[in-house]
Image (cartoon, rainbow, N blue to C red):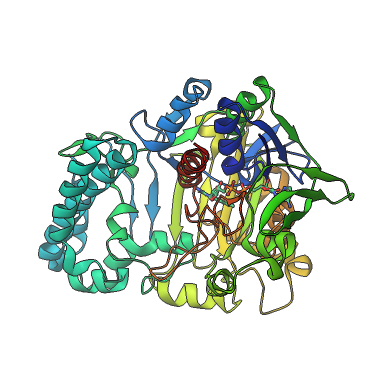
Length: 508
Ligand SMILES: Cc1cc2nc3c(=O)[nH]c(=O)nc-3n(C[C@H](O)[C@H](O)[C@H](O)COP(=O)(O)OP(=O)(O)OC[C@H]3O[C@@H](n4cnc5c(N)ncnc54)[C@H](O)[C@@H]3O)c2cc1C
């Protein structure tokens, strides 16, 4: 069977790698001249930076994205570097202590900072423990077969019963239940700013899962009762190496990946897929089309609203998207390690995450003043910069549409303002700049061909309901950050694996 895949991001490549192994005739069309979508690594003047993702979950040998790569026989084609990161707030910084102080050193650290919260912290960490075990069980369930699935489901159900009351709580409600100090609440909800989701919209029980202690100290033992804790890795040499591992698998087995080929239309007749039409008018027929990319582009522009059931249109209209990002990649001529000791640190400059997100949604950009992160990939891969120099990425969430003028008019000014904020962490940063690449929301939009750039796809809010992998059109499947799998590198890899298994079962 001939299958056309739209997009060479990690979702499209995962789909291609599975289907080529199953003997399908695979062709991937990518509108950009480079493959990899937001997981590409960009290069200039001897420096390299990752266009999007940084520290990735899911790649320890027992975790789902790694298992998927093992199933495809490509796990050992990539070098993963396990690491932890720092967090900085206006009044305190959270870096792992030099000498290991046990798995709950952060809890002790917060208790010293906020003694009045001792009881709340004890209770929160009990919930954290339960949630880590639930996550581990869920992960096992994803890979279980036969009777084992049944027993795992029962075990998971019984565990969920113990936290049943909190299932419908938002992150804000959960924080208010455990803590009274807004600064401590922000420690646990700060990461939601990265998803551009308000604490009042995010599921409360998701809070421990986005604050896994092993993200802050790799010395914490990973073994827990029901499995192991999640881990976080960089890709040695940049995320492009991850992309290339999947792409090589497809190409080595006779699949094709064609760049600079924009799919303009998905051809549907009598609710059955017939193929696609490229931008230059060429029509290519196929039995299956697997589309990644933005929802509106795929369903409204490529398929056409007239071919969709009203229920899907209504579902699409209700989707809430993440915000976008402003990214400044710089190459500098000095070593910044005395100012930031590890590759990654999140600098939060406000405790009021709820208002920050509300303003971002209204187009009010904080100009770097409410927070940003600094990522120095050349710390883990020195080859990403010329000798003695460093590659740095500074980025922050930003509205797709600015209330005051637009990104094209303000690109240099706002990039400079972000660098000025970063200079408060790394003094004289701007003096040391040898080269620079600015990525505004408009640049991202063009780079990956979406209608309105949102950096991780749809927002992980409690009410979100993304389109499912299997669409109402026969032979059309939808994958990637905007589909039911949601965003994130591991998320799209795992989600696509599930979609392809479902597709194959369907044919069998
Ligand atoms: C700045 C940033 C930071 C991130 N940080 C992290 C992180 O730290 N950890 C993490 O897990 N995730 C992170 N993510 C999210 C994660 O990278 C994405 O959710 C995931 O990689 C998306 O993969 P995808 O295949 O769905 O989409 P994409 O990577 O966007 O790929 C889609 C591809 O389809 C192509 N395409 C679209 N339309 C067409 C068409 N009509 N014809 C041909 N080709 C087309 C595009 O050009 C693109 O190459 C980050 C994302 C960004 C942008």
